[in-house]
Length: 179
Image 1 (cartoon, rainbow, N blue to C red):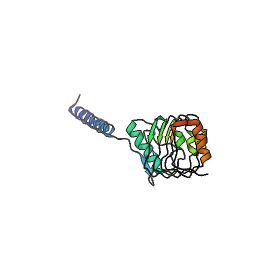
Image 2 (tube, helix red, strand yellow; image 1 turned 135 degrees about the vertical axis):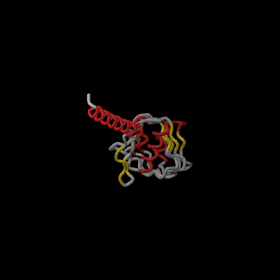
Image 3 (cartoon, helix red, strand yellow; image 1 turned 90 degrees about the vertical axis):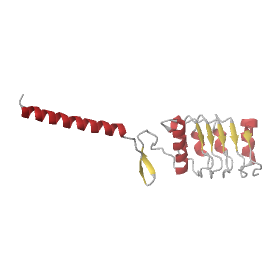
Image 4 (tube, rainbow, N blue to C red; image 1 turned 30 degrees about the vertical axis):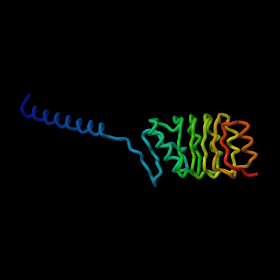
């Protein structure tokens, strides 16, 4: 082999090795990034964002934090969610949390409980200090075993009576109710 051929081969091999080293470095250092548009996550490589993202940004933020803390990859894997004092108003799309068993929504601004009917495993629920005036949807959740409604004094007394028949002493009612 001539010196020129050896030199060209050595130069080509060196360039290929440098390119491989750069590629390996980039791959090793790459971190998955979530893509957002107008503060609304549209892509997450870990699969945490779906088309059924919660409509309430504060609820979605709480879900995202819980996923990180509980080290789960998908919202459907959450079994416990504590969103007290989170300024949540809307529970739309919470039904994607199919395995959720305990939910704390204390001290928020919630007035519509209908989306909770989509949670088949929900057993314990804290709704202390919200704006709830209708607990009819709770009567349809077969899995519920414990509910706290303190601070929601505009709930009809008849609905509270119905829920008390289902839950017994596992209902913490508000101090007063509406006749």
